[in-house]
Length: 633
Image 1 (tube, helix red, strand yellow):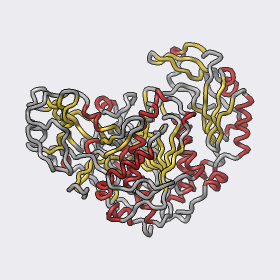
Image 2 (cartoon, one colour):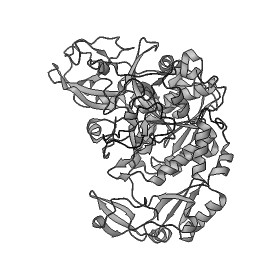
Image 3 (cartoon, helix red, strand yellow):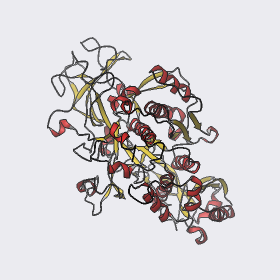
Image 4 (cartoon, helix red, strand yellow):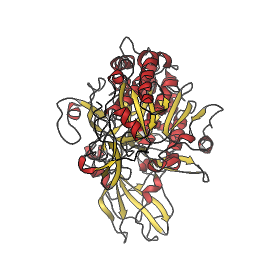
């Protein structure tokens, strides 16, 4: 019996009867492989500095032969499914997809599908317990697709123009009527605006370009460029103009375009699905452009392969990730998407978590590391979601995101970066978390003040994952033993993020794209900026190792915690009891009204940047010393 295949909302009171006999359902059967415990043990050993197996990576063929499902196991599962009358769609060592009518589904899984009325909407789910034959039970992790699901995965970024939406004021009372920003922190003083948090303030920084980020994080000084390394980027769908857009963006800002063969794509438009629920290609185009241009910008000589999932559903995203490890397409995998474990639509099934972890562990064994963005909604609580601009309203409680919170990936949080000059010399960082206020109609004040929470990096203590071996000596016990709901935990738990880099919406980065429209550039913010930034730095670090893979990076990251490899990001204003860092964002006149916002920085929801490891910025942001530490390490 598969205990996690029937959702809690499939109750007798909501049951509307059996689905139509002709209803075709597609399900994914995940395979457990030969020895999941041995897979996890070798992944831990090969990733841990000091272990005798450290760095002794296997090829993709060796990893599959040793740990994944055997041909005999796959054939046995296929025979069971086809024997029940289901049609097999695709098969790999990770999963088998099948489809069939209501009768075939019932024969295969022992339960009829019924329609349920849930919150005024119709959904389907098994009406009884899902069971599979004992003869194949040891080969099956679980089954998904038998019940209706609503995707929670979303890009963890938004364009800066989103922040201009809302109330405007009548122009002409002193503030600039054209969009105004500072070339570096504190450059342009604001006049004509009412007092906010402090007597004086400045305009927020203009969107960064890659050369400034390379300067700030020590990449320029290191002389590294990711040469000889491949970074894979996974998002949903794909843009038809990605390479052309990236090349134009690079040359517009004095960088090199992709050389021939440096950029490749794996997309299958004929198999794209769930476009309405996922936002379709247009909804992911900005994310794709951001990811590709950030990786290329911070690791200009690295190869980049874009792998577009066929939707934002977990079965398609995990299939894209599995393809990367099965074919060993890259050394580092950047993922600027995240979802929630617990929503009003149900919880993430344990079988799906195990399926993802199988991929991450296989990657670790092959020397492939996975980076994920931590989210843009602070602690993801209903309170944060009430005003946050990139939050999931279906959240049921404070929680960190998934897959970012999984112990087998590197969770990348966000910071707000202030530079000292136009070149990009590092000034400071604080945690990514902003409060937003608007001008009052009479332009004599700001409302509300303090502002409401608008945007913030994700993180926190997981209720779902125990503390991994690499965090024990670094993460404070008070964090690992206190859940995000405030409840104590008897056991130490996983805390995120692991590292952090610039991602704040008001210290944004420039992105260029067309995708069916004339090419243009604009600012984007989010931990979707932070993740590809860090993936690019990983490519640079691998180059420093003379091309030797790092693989799963977390043990090496925590080994370097507290050293010059990372800047400890601390919210100094909060520590010193001072008003928050603040700036004015002036978007100019839009639709006849002046759009101006007062922004307070370092105000993440439920998370705090403190001295040492913290749940807003992890061990801190990487430096030139981090890159150089891999020369002999």
